[in-house]
Length: 265
Length: 332
Ligand SMILES: Cc1cc2nc3c(=O)[nH]c(=O)nc-3n(C[C@H](O)[C@H](O)[C@H](O)COP(=O)(O)OP(=O)(O)OC[C@H]3O[C@@H](n4cnc5c(N)ncnc54)[C@H](O)[C@@H]3O)c2cc1C
Image (cartoon, rainbow over all chains, first blue to last red; front, side, top):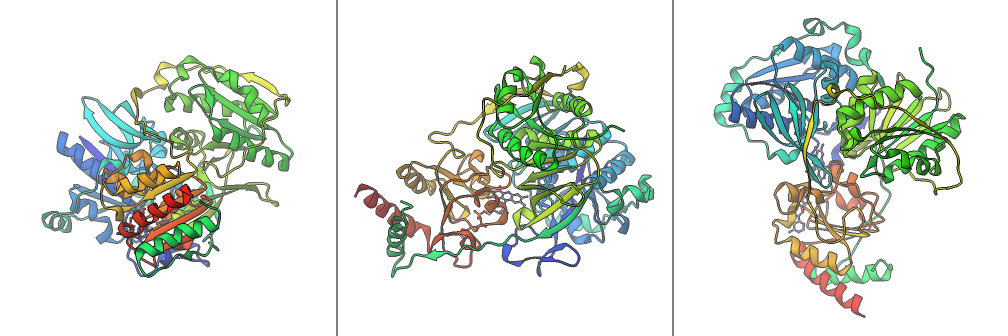
């Protein structure tokens, strides 16, 4: 079983919103003073890949696309148990949209050549789009199932539970296929000391656009089909009215009274 | 090359009914079409979808295109992508609006890439740029910490819209419009996936999407038992219980009760956030609530930035006393 997982590096989405800042000049977002992380849903995809590998054996290749990626961050999937890491790390990939990103990832997957499952997170924590997985599927002409909470691989097909708003669908899909993974798959495992040591020794393979037979006009900003016009932080003007009291119980009772006064209760 | 003109709204059909988000799409679609001086078309795909065309017209469409085929019954994305590729090729709209639903999340990006364009997912605002006449597509990014405005380079300019972000028009049954049938022409080979089962996890009581009062708990509730006190309050106020993601991930509550960006997006009259820090991703699902009330032991928690009323304290002490007082007030 050859499994490819696409994971990106992002600013830490779990940091408190109060340290989120946008640099107006560059339209770039940051979490002040907090280092980047592996995208959480990508991590769930790595976890899903490890579960399949445990059941069926095989090899997990991770691909990350970005510019000046932190080795420490992008090696986390290796420390969790993935086998190989390919980085599409080059200035040319800078500021791509979902079109140029999916195009580059699909080209890299084609170059890998052997794949049974391609896993992505259900959506990245920065773009919140959820297009990369379905995009790769369309470019490679593969079937696709999104928002998986369980993946069972049998001969030549996969049985997937897809999260819906009132439960889940059970879907059978022939492989190779693209699957996007949701958090219901289960908490990603922590890297073990042994895993971290192994990851240290694995040298990532780096592919520039030419290595995946892509013209510079197809990647990064040049390959975009969507333009970002503006990035801004919404402001909340509301003010919280605190109910107080000498004890928690008294504050609670005062809250109820306040709600009654405001005709909310 | 074909000329792309007009606004099209994909009106999602489920169980032979048009979803509310279809009317919301037609509402904003009407506004954009009027601004451009162009037509608004509704696209209905499904088994028995034909019966719904008049409803779409009543909600603002000038015409409706219907693909009605029993093979479309259980919403196989493969089939819908093929059908929509054909429909869009035929009607060549400048803008295509879909809904950010279970099916829209799957269908919209697949269709976009099939058509050679991208789609801006989960838009909360749509407008026409006065100079270029292109669609300005505003969507939350970074989990809701920011919003981005995008434009598409090519046609159709595709978007999905967030539930309840746009307003539907009052239906006007006297509105008239052409209804055109388009054949599905599905090949068996178009459909590679097979739906073996659809599991619905029923939750007792009022559905969280429909509730006027939602009592939600977070990681700080600590256990499934902890939620019983939230149930009690919900019962008194005839509301529903909800949660941030950790209680669902921990199995204290069913996943279907998760509120947020990747859960339910709700807008009740009253939203209680108890032991919820107020991450941007969680707030994405509840910031449309009329009044947010927060109980949190951390006075600096982000939830207080959006709450109207709050108590700083341990919910285990605050909530029982609050419930007691509410009971008393409701009885008086
Ligand atoms: C792409 C993406 C999508 C996501 N989608 C969602 C989503 O849809 N919905 C969602 O909720 N999350 C979502 N998340 C996760 C989100 O980032 C947060 O991790 C999550 O919302 C935190 O939940 P919480 O507030 O319950 O937990 P925490 O952030 O851990 O907060 C717990 C709070 O409880 C308080 N507390 C603890 N004990 C007590 C006590 N005894 N009394 C009073 N207060 C107490 C603490 O002060 C703290 O504020 C998503 C994340 C990503 C990256």
